[in-house]
Image (cartoon, rainbow, N blue to C red; front, side, top):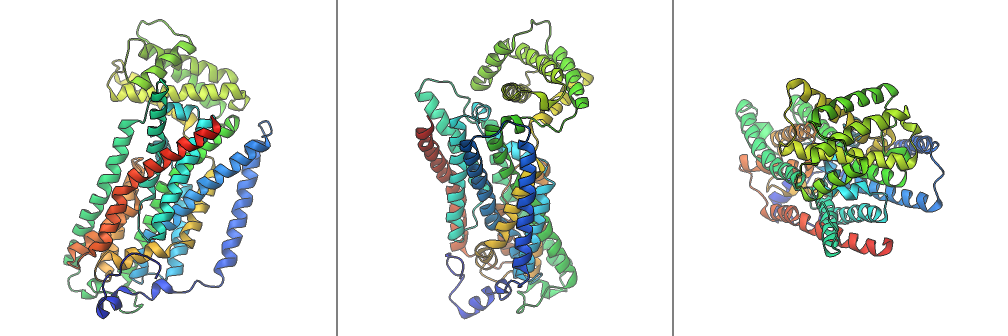
Length: 543
């Protein structure tokens, strides 16, 4: 068997119920040629797009090329592992209810993941990045920046591979967040020991993400149980819906359609949510190594720059209430200190006003973002990041000047325009992440599928249970994506399956549940310790 978790039961009846012939259906012969063709075509596209981006910047040194290639390979490796670790959850219900043959389900899930990644907004990507200390994001091109990226990615991959090998449905989102926190905590410790000031991790963002990770499985469990009971009441005369499948017998047409639809939705939502995490990390890598090409969104036209200048001037007027302007250098110092210490002084709002006014003038003065020299690009990006972070902090603290509705609208439009320079994802990055997720889904799906389908409950999953679990998981993940919150596909779907088992009085396999809960509990401390240790180790080679 493909999992190291304990079997459901040693009894012949339980064994017969737990086994599924569908999960072992062989892959069609045409799959490999099509698979390889898609891979080659995608790689050619990525190569052309990357070459086009780099054509307008000075040639990279051999060291930079090697560093860029290695970093991208590791980042895509994380998404690859994410694919066969997390996406497998989406296909478990359709496979174990015989709604689709296993090969078809896996290929379809991979394709839907691809589509989900391609339409992703980027909100989750930058929400994850916001967990890092501000100074680490601003100095991502330094040796410490590269140590940070490599440490958190390698830690996340190692933990994901370990839990996958054991067949434990641990969360890739949980893993990545723990890795980011580990780097941030270690950075704070090292700075404190050296007597330097550090902003530390963004506790507010950590709490926001933590709430999403904590409550989403509880929502999945409760709503799936409730939905299953409703389904059981509405379809009480169709008893076959609430019995384990006989052999490879598919469910009734309506239930089958719902199962396929929800599998599609979960796979798509997983791509649009989890795929963004890899995008954010890749953007950090690109900004650090090729700032001239990727620090600012070069797709913004001259009209957008003019609008930005106008909004900057108007916002600065709203903020600057009878205060003298500060120089850019002074404004940077004030805003940096505020972000690091969270102590608001009388200079913070005037500094933000001055930075806002000067940003609009500086950006519009170039006429075209492609005309900005490399040194100025990094400086403008960092000033923008300081500004948008300060806005968030002041807004949360309700420390911005009083505004009427028109003024508040202007400030909101300016902040949105400011984010448009920073929060963007090139299409080739989306394609690369989508390919990695899709490949991972199609290669390593079976271990996790077996655990979800055979080992969470004591009895085989019924058609009604599969439908209820998938429908709740799809809705929960889609809602989280819309709100820009990272949630775990693994946690939500596994909790939903467990909820239906409890509602159906099928009984839970507590050995498996205990193992999954242990992974859930220990993922954060383990990845925090691992990434923090790796970050310290890598710093020894770059400092």
